[in-house]
Image (tube, rainbow, N blue to C red; front, side, top):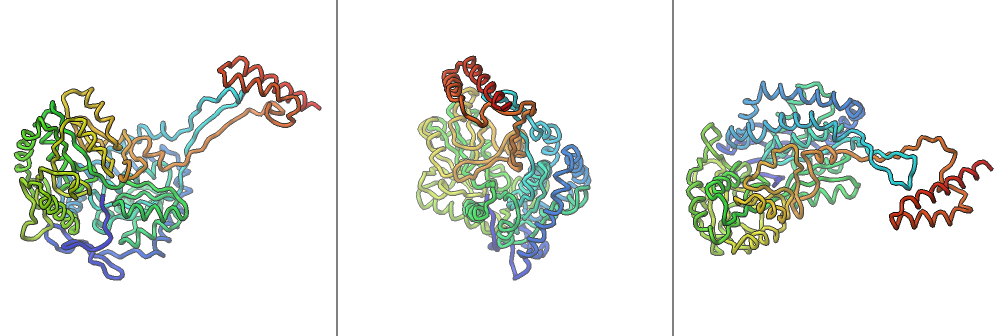
Length: 528
């Protein structure tokens, strides 16, 4: 995913020293002007979150969940208004604003209401025979103050889900939304103001790249960053100087593998939705369609027919996709398509920036894509479907893995067992069989990448543990005056050898007998 820190060609963030302007990507009209939060103001926001931390972490988990569940009623009451505001600043269809942005909140809250206690509560684990009479436990506790830096492509969902996860785990949060989509940040601020969470527990700071940098350098205990690889590296370097942990959700170049026995009609419809939804501005967009030679031509024919059906326009109830959210990204998409054309690819549809207002780039189908093209090597992050011809499934797996990114992927086949076997060979954080994108919205399974797609996981149990420290407890009832391994060591060596050999040879009776002798020697010594 890409986070920008400056102004676009037609959109956005026309910054002065202290303010930036938010504009509509369809019309170019100004929506609002926002103050850039200064480093001193960032530190003050973090201090407020720190002051609220003790009360929030000491609030019982059940009560924390009750408080956060209050926002379901707020969203139910204002959801359509929120959707219109999100669509106004992003250009995405109202269906997407409701489905992929707002619906994430009740889904994730309901999941964690059922499962958070199981994940976070103290649990007992087995204690080895070497430690007789003791019990072992694992528990989790909040990190403190979490800094969340969120992107512009899903400005509500990709901010709210990590914020919710951090809060459920008992942390307070300072959120820095993208300067490209500050209105979504304000919606989040309004929602938290409407529920009974302690004052200061969630702080929203608006600003540009300098604000994000100040947040990383402030007194936070972890940074959760969603954005570009380049910016992610800078975040990690700054955090390492402190040091504090970071979680990086970065780019993707997701491979969709079409096997010879795939349901081609379903796969074609899926590819068009998975590559063009949100105008292709998803870290898990289909960005490489790897089709085996046997069905390549037929699949491309079906794909072209589906692309022709996609309706692009202003965010109303009829459009399938809208304009690009960030003007500068239009230039990236166009450069990738031009490079592909110059290197021999065939543009079957789209491929040109249209005249007229708005940050539009048309649905574009590109065939004959090869590995040396920018459209294959780099994240395009736009409404483009690049098709790669492969010899067979093994070749497709090889191409899928021979890449800098490893976020998401999919395999399409009628043989489910074989599909799962192929999916297990893809080097990515999540892989689907005969489906795509949906795994991002599933609160039960972890989400994250490998390679340059980042590291760390959120969603699922991992989504709470990633915002928690782990503490190990060993407990002895304290009845005995001494332990077999304490001083003095006199007379203990032969029996320690017995315990050592018994453990190495899996002779537990011998090991236990030696430990008992060691304890008897310790008890006799304790009486002297």
